[in-house]
Length: 182
Image (cartoon, rainbow, N blue to C red):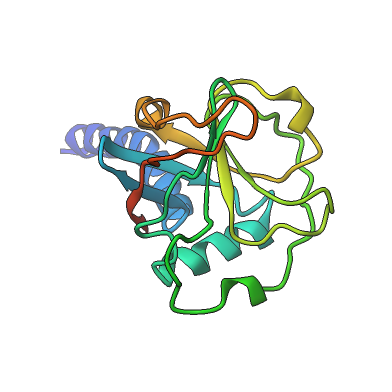
């Protein structure tokens, strides 16, 4: 009897050691993953609230307001990035009145699949537009805020129609169908 109890206890501890990290990861990531639905498929993006809390908070707020639903990828430069966040129709609120965000510099590099917040030349001008890099972009490192990373579906970002070579303006842009937090 004691032997069975001992073996059962050991098996239970082993199962707990395997399952516990998965449970911790699930609890930590709850609400920090974006599910972005494109016509070509689903893109999953892990947010980094510990590295860029203000930017993560802003995008979560905008997602919860359905701000990005129906939004075009209006600026896409081949071998660099796909940018979205500028409405083509009037949003339900005046997004231009949102307070500007100061750049939150992180140690993370702009690699393929990195989520960054667009801004003007002013370091403290980020607001509602974001981009996903499609290749390594060293010149952005420590100049723009990294606040997430594509963890699934990068092939769908690659399928987004590119714009002109100079500014990346897209004539017939791909649209975000829906964005939500999971």
